[in-house]
Image 1 (cartoon, one colour):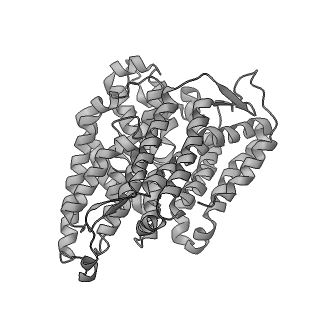
Image 2: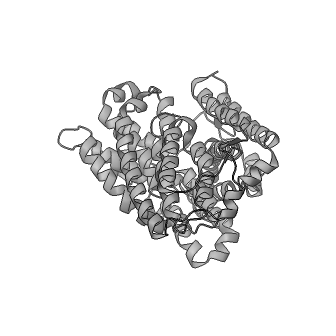
Image 3: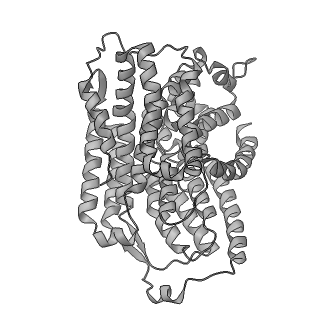
Length: 474
């Protein structure tokens, strides 16, 4: 199991915190919270971007401590300014209601999907690679971007071990399988699941984002195929060594029981959104709903069962290890804590320090929504912040009524597409991005830095998004 002992001090603090009474409602930071409180969040992003290049040895051994440091760089000064009760409430709420459910879901998908091994000798030709990317894009909306990414990233890497150029394969995999492919159902990506909880019909995005998703996916798959073909020919159209072909397996699946576990995970996520027994526990003033507790306990049970019923050999042949999920867990605890003031400012809407940005989505002359601005504002902020609360901010800015927004197709489509599509712009835009990068690096592929990856994403994705804007959102 991944080493997550760094969480123990946080859990101990939670147990020692005094109860915060709910009689006066949810304690809140002032809506006019100044932008300088976001500095620790900016610093953790810069640390992720710069430290692996500038101080790689230090970063490799201490990135978890750096992440915690930047989380505390917000919490400690805020405690002196706003008081212990308020800041501790937000910290524990973030850990209980956001971070722990987030990491438990990722852990379950990582474990179950990582126990499924695609047997057989796939040769990484441009046609085979494009087919894998297309298949992953299709299934991402039904088993989640994390599930699809964890299922297919290792087969893609194994199929291309004989190739010289591999970075572009991982980059396009992140674009398509870990992000854009998850746009068609609430199962695909967390923002759409929040929309489902708010009353958006399950198949609404399937109907209204299908053409947009297909349009972007086809363009990216064509670009990928052409690029991979050029690089493949530049390499001399290599084939695996004869010794590798001698040990070839027939195509098939090992660890098939994990398909059942992946289906259980999907079912548990749906259950937590549709089953509401009306039972709520208050943990130090924070409401924790029974359906969410049940979901998380069952997800941890799935992790245990997957490890128990998947052979050790299957995981070893699948190059499975805990490092990717441990890296995500350590980095994202710092990201979630330091991100608190950014989300507070966003949620303040037109009363907060980013009022000028929020107001850009509405035409000042007519009061009508500007769908292209909803697409870009939701998308750009989702690239650097948690895309789920960012989706909610603009969902509420647009009225917050699911029935109303489902009839205003352009606006809800823009918000949904922005939150999902642009999660591909940075490594932190969506959790699978980081795990895919980590798995690739553990396999010996030297991935671009944070900003290096953005050169790829901005250079390739933004022109496609601009074209999408002109066709669908103007």
